[in-house]
Length: 276
Image (cartoon, one colour):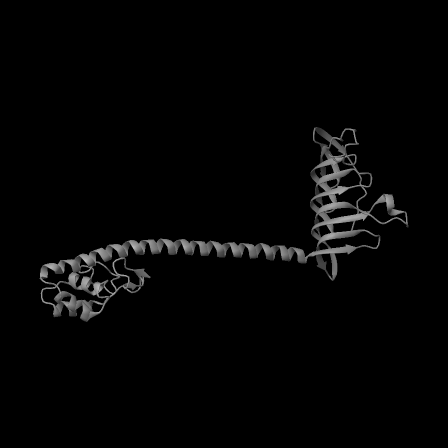
């Protein structure tokens, strides 16, 4: 809404579709002038010697009331004072142009902010739906031998099998054979699964503490990985003064050790994996 700074009672809409004078640009040069051309023409007809711009200015001064615009001309002592009506028209037009530019700028900023907020809400909803869809596939399964699996699963013919991101836990060997001990679990494999098999990046740990951190192909070591021969030592263990074991970079192909990181070696290595 445009509100005149010359008259508090004068206000009208910033409406780009309400261009009453788009066909009379040579006369007014103000397409958004709020009063129709026929009203201006009637004022000109009733006031001999008045021009279109003077009549338009008088209408602005009278807030569009035709009779008051005609009376404004007659209240002037001489036609020389009619120039004030034309000046009022030009001043109002200049003020309207500035106000409309600010209105468009502010409206555009609000629209941009609204679009950004809508995009942010859509992105948040997408992330929530993605997490919800992922969580819907996360299950905890226990096996007959006491092991358990926590992670994403896939329903294959009514049977849930590991598929996606998940961790296999096995009974700790220290408490496995003691029926009175509280059962504790240690991670055997943490990583990606496909159709019940270790497949993709993951970490496998044996009972003696050695581990492989690398890639798997259908339950077999495959590609580059890091092999640790001994259990990892916690960095904050102040009572442990023994040096930490150095990890070994190795390369495997379908379970066969083909190369160390510093040289070649072709030897078959067999590991006792946990198979689903």
